[in-house]
Length: 365
Image 1 (cartoon, rainbow, N blue to C red):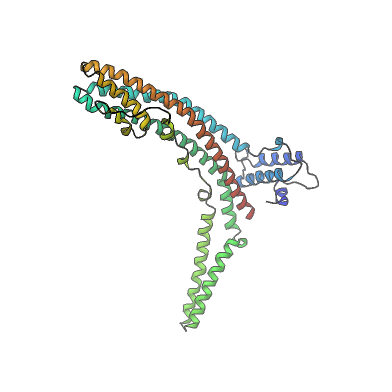
Image 2: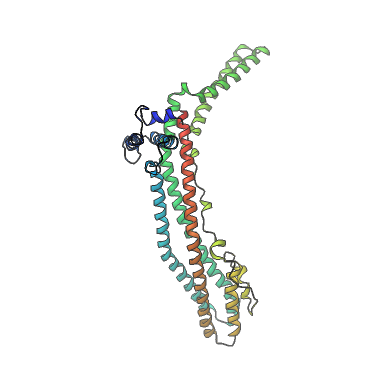
C-alpha cells in the first residue's frame, strides 16, 4: 500500500490532513462497513479501511500517540473472549477434577473388594493401581485438549467469517471483469501458443486441413482451467491460515513429572517398584513414589488378615493419590498460563498474516 491508495480508501483530502481528521474518517467508514454493525456490510472494504489507517499511523510523523491506535479492537475483543474461556476452563476443571478422582477412588474400592485371596491381591494390585491412575490422567489430558481445541475452533470460525466476504468479493469481481484480468490473459496466452504449435504441426506434416480445427481445444481448456484456478485462488478455506491445535495440548511429560522428585525405584516383595514402567504417562519418578511406598507397605503387613490388609492398603493408596493430585494441580497452575499466552501470541501473528494476505489480494484486484 502507498500513501495515495490509503488516502483514497479513507476518502481523505491531502490539503486538509490532521490526526483528528484521519481518525474521524476512519471511525465513520469503519462504522459504515463494520460486519457486525452495518446491514449493507462489505467485509473487504472494512479490511482495506483498517489497513489504510494502519499505514497512515506508521508513516505519518504526527501520529506519535497511542490514542490513535484503534484498528486492533476486533482482535482485542477476540483475545479478551479467549482469556475468559481459559478462566471458565479453570472453573469447570474444579468440578471435573473432583469427578475424575472420585471415580478413581470408587474403582480402587471395587478392585480391592474383588481380591478374595493374598495371591490375587499380590497379582492384581500392581497392575490395577497403575491402570486406575493412568486412566484418570488420560481423562484429564483428554478433557483439557478438548476444551483448548474448542477455543481454537472458535477462533478459526471467527477468522473465516471475518475474511469470507473478502474472498467472495475477489472471486465475483474476477469473473465479472475477466477481460481486465492479467490472470485470464496468462491462461489465454499459453493456450494460444499451444494452438499455434498444433496448427504449425498440421501444415508441416501435411495433415488434412480439418485437423487444424483441434487447435481450438487448447483455448477451451485454457478458459476452463482459468475458471477452475480462479476458484482455487480465491477460495477462502484455502487462503485462510488456520491454527495448529496440536501445538496447544496439555502434555503429560511436563504436566506430571518433576525432575527433582527425589524418588528412586526399589524392588519390593511383590514387584510394585516397577509401577513406573506400567504408568507410561506418569513416568519413573511418580511411579517409583507410588510403587515403592505401597510395595514396601504390603511386605511389612504380610501377616495381617486379608480384610485388614485391604483397608490399610486402601488408606495408603489414598495418601498416594492425594500426592499425585497435588502434583497435577501444581503443574496445571504452571502449564495452563503458558499455553494461554502462547495461544494468544500465535493468534495475533495468525490474524496479522491473514489480514496482510487479504489486503495484498484486494490491492491487486
